[in-house]
Length: 76
View 1 (cartoon, rainbow, N blue to C red):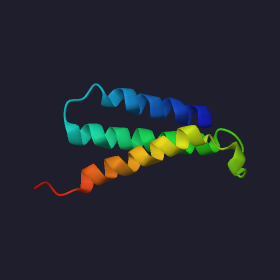
View 2 (tube, rainbow, N blue to C red):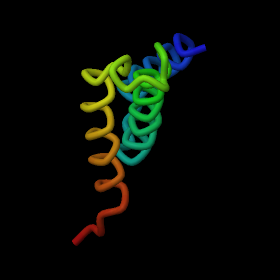
View 3 (spheres, rainbow, N blue to C red):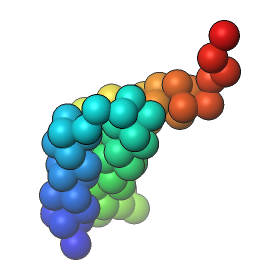
């Protein structure tokens, strides 16, 4: 099941490159980042933190927060 989440995340990330509207790109990328975080946690034994794919989880979690920031920031 985790592999399918990884594929879904890849589709969201690649799909974001096909769009032109920046807000839509950020939403699509946000969903992709969230999927990659879930993928990194559930690929192996999610109950054992040492099995988590931290090189996948950490940058995608940071990118998700960046996307949320830009989506919610007020334009001046």
